[in-house]
Image (cartoon, rainbow, N blue to C red):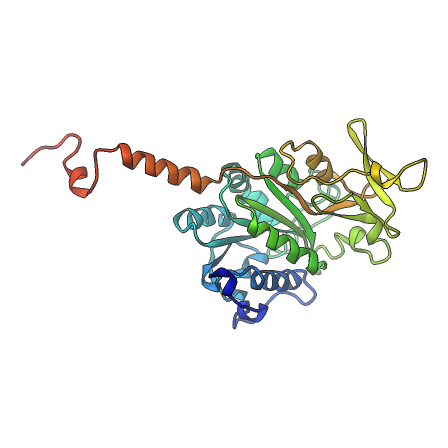
Length: 337
């Protein structure tokens, strides 16, 4: 039945006026999500988009699907309940870096630990946009903001490292302006069974304009980004001649054709490797010494929460002497008045 569903991105556009600032990266992400969902072969009524509070959390209003605009930081928790109660739904959580990793940080790590089969999009612009420019858990140390006028002295989170630390099985990263890559990742995330975390580097034109400019600069982006795909060599660069190898316990950039290096020497990406060792190194790469890793970095199969829960329910029901409400009312300590 799913294969017969023929939708276009227009089917996912709501009648609400999109009220993000002109030039905001959220516009491109919204477009990417709508186009990706149209390609998933899933009936529109099977989608549910859940959000917390923040600029990104306006998302449910702009999607012609079921949705829920919840409270600050609680999108992942409420979405967990939605999925467990309705396992046939395709559930999507939309978070900002503040909403998802500050007040919602506890729910973020436990969502990964539980491995509930839903998808979380983390819009990372390294700032609180809706509340007018305070630093967030991902703001780079030293950044001057409304709440750190002399520069923040805090070490920022790397969302992917949090996923691995919480025993997460799926992490991918994209950039708002690369809509084709974002769509590719979103379709893959939906096909993955378990919690899928997709970090999308997003630009806030008002309070953190150009925050990801080092990686998106048109002249240099091919040398500063590496798109990873499972089973393919970790090669990048304007001339497609740079690659990653292991030098002891560290990653090293080499040039194919120099010092006897051939393409065979370059690491092959294995997103399905259970050990997070190499995935952690790829997630942690940053400029200027390394390119930033994009694409599906980790995708490991594991039993999902709903499977364990349903199996437990079946087991308990089979062993229980209580088969109906009448049995329940006459069980335990009872008395007549």
